Image 1 (cartoon, one colour):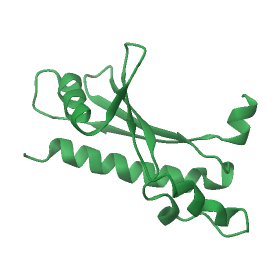
Image 2: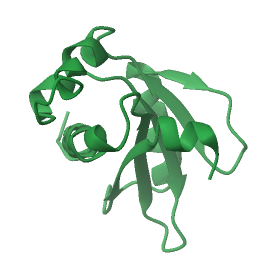
Image 3: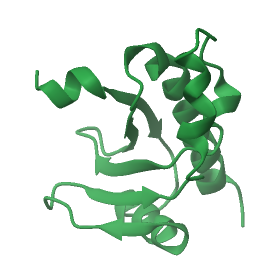
Length: 129
């Protein structure tokens, strides 16, 4: 574990998207995500996007430093990296991750928000257009 991992650990959320009814679900999902988010260079085994957030989201969290418990509302619009990959079973896996500057106290709250954002993205993918 690096010093950066100790200082600013990753908050992570994962979700699987199944039964999209298309021949190549990864290509379909990647095309959909490109319309909404900035694609970033990746290693070839996955697609990586940046979901821009509210630059003030971290500033709203400073209450943790003065002893207030982290709340989901502090992170409602936090930006994050979105990774898309094909699972061994052919389904699509989405992973959201973001470093949490104030550390371990916030990680769970940010993870809950990221999970909710992934659920919104999945609903958008499976809902009829």
